[in-house]
Amino acid sequence: MTKVDVLIVGGGIAGASLGARLAASKSVMLIEAEDMCGRHATGRSAAFWQASLGGSTPERLLSILSKPMFDAGWPGTSTALLRQRGAVHLTGPCGERMDEVDDLTGEYAPVHLSRAQIDQLIPGLRAQWTGAWFEAGCADIEVAAFHAACLAAIRRQGGKVATDAALLAATRTSGTWKVETSDGEVEAPILVNAAGAWGDQVAECADVQRMGLEPRRRTVVQLRVGQRGLRDLPFVTDLHESFYFKGEGDNSVWVCPLDETLVEPCDAAPEEIDVATAIDRFEKAVDWPVEAVERKWAGLRTFAPDRAMKFGFDPIADGFFWCVGQGGMGIQTAPAASLLCASLIGDEPLPAELAGIDPSDFSPRSKA
Image (tube, rainbow, N blue to C red; front, side, top):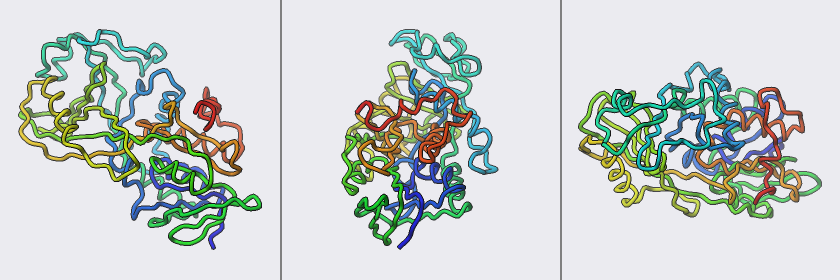
């Protein structure tokens, strides 16, 4: 029997970053059902940091507060976690205004580009694009390095990470969770549900009311195209939010049709219709000939019914903490979100790094 202060279920970035925060002051164990952490969502994410993502929501504030933490290399890595790329939001068919960015100021404020200025950045754009908004601060996130640093921080501070350890059942007895896993029994007063798409299944195993989480499939295709010099191409999307593409290699791009297909929790695989849609939308955006599909994959993005992130203790299940519903922003918000969750678990005032955050905006049952 293993006894710890906090048992975290789920080894993706949500659970790993929270574990990295908690392990300095509490005994922590993280369990992951798969043979490796981060297989389904974290490991398949084409993640980037972008100030405008999320609209005028508390989640966007978590992103902005996470930026200096990424810049500082939290939770302890010499690898630069952000690679500057810039984002271009094309305008034309869907109008010229970029909504929900009026509160972005200074370095985060988008700058309008004329068609002539866009052509300097993206040669070959088709004629329907009349202008764009440019976000200089958009950056790729080094997901593998960030995730590995979080797992390493748990171990370095004395915490445990167990793979091939699926949660089978959990029972609350005398203020403690008694948890049966496929790798043995664990006791902990606090049980954290950071299981992503499987969050409702974890709740059911603990006899806790489901959240109504919605896993949604997202597809990415790597194309080889008849155009060179694309490695540092900006992230390019449209105001209709029907596609994005960004440079990968000298003559390759990653393309996404921004699909959100509701699915059961699963090992997601790309559907041919989504691959075809991605290629079609890409070809309608630029005149670069598609030469080959080099790779294709799909991952899961999981949302609560109201699409708000859910962080906090369940009001009717003692010691059961939700850390779910991160949707498509889980990685770029993880530094600040993990600090918020660690503060709530420790029943501590929010630190200065979380200025402006209201924990009630993320209450698990407040909006469901």
